[in-house]
Length: 346
Ligand code: SAH
Image (cartoon, protein in one colour):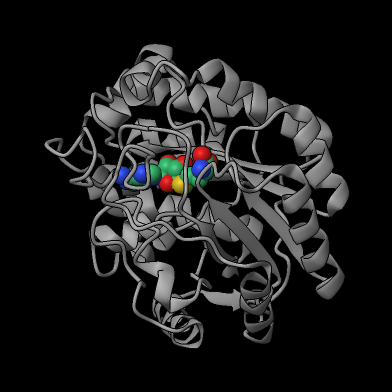
């Protein structure tokens, strides 16, 4: 085993220069993935937690340069699910054994705090034994508090990149890393289990940017760390930029597992979109969560963050069957419970 891997495995940290070396130079992949898998099994065994993902609106007021549902994409066909449709998705997901529902969407001004609270309370009343996760972007602290009081307990908000200059290259002037970080700390202070993370191979990203991402996550200590390869969308200003690299992405999953042994790390849809077995590979590299799509089939293609996004044609039951086979074939087991993180909010 290389010295670097041995340090990572025993100390769960590396110096800045070691992290840069790790990122820049080829690593013995099988040993790295095996070490990450052993670490994950130490804390979570062979369990894979499922989160039913409901993409409830693709309207967005923001203009992130990488994202297919950005406000400036006039070719995007927009949709919103009704509360009834969303509750139906939860009902279907519940019957399939899902005990966490993730409501994700663009930053859609139609959804006032009152509307979000009404929706969250309705789900909480119908499914008191489930966790409700929101992923609806940057809000004032008071709004996050209201959603929490209505019953939301988890929030996913990737920081996207922890380097201010890189953040500027990926987002218009109206957005700032400072506000994104403020949101994450507010969410934590309220008591949410927070998920953050970043894209791998986003345009202009350097190894130094990735190092900053890791250091920021070490400071934040989120319950969940969501990463995935950046995938180009032609209807964005980054149409000519290459997508991220699958191997680097898998290497980073393993690095994150060894740096954050107790974190929840999803094998995200972007991995599956890059490679037919991308999500299984991400599980074997240290991932322990999957987020099957529960959105109605009719709208799935429209939540078009990046090109060739998978699972846009299937029904929820088909998705569950497919996932079950994939998870088993990778050597793991689906667990049907809320699947709380071992990282506690401090
Ligand atoms: N509006 C919410 C949800 C955003 S979509 C929010 O701001 O948090 C969820 C994630 O998809 C984003 O955080 C981003 O990291 C990822 N994403 C967006 N465009 C992408 C692309 N082209 N390739 C890969 N991931 C992308």
